[in-house]
Amino acid sequence: MCLIFYLPSAGDYFEQGNRYYEKHQYSEAIRVYEIAVELEPENGLSWAALGSAFGENREYEKALEEALIFFEAAAKNQSQEPAIHLNLGIVYLTLDEPEKAKEVFRKVIEIEPVKY
Image (cartoon, helix red, strand yellow):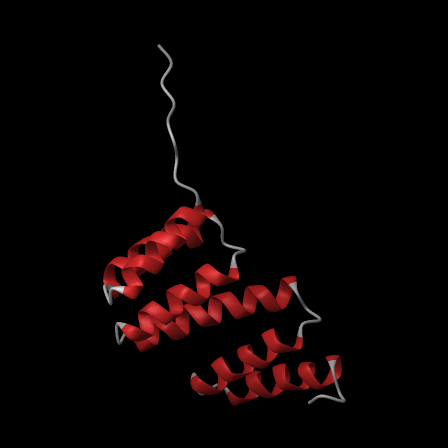
């Protein structure tokens, strides 16, 4: 007899979080999105979903904290992607850190001066 065990993947947790989210069960969605992020921290969709669930659950500070963690890491890993820097700057402004925001917005203009 051979037993086969299935260990859920980050994607499985992400999908489960989506099901909870669609049912407006945001606390449960947060719980499983956090597992998805822990298993696969480079997955931006899981971070975005987690932040959105915190927002829907009216945990705005936590949503901003998660956004800050994600966009700071993404800016380091994808340093030439202007949208990531733009969003990071917006988070800094929301957190009342205008000097950091200004520095990040300068980076956006440096990366893509014609568009911004």
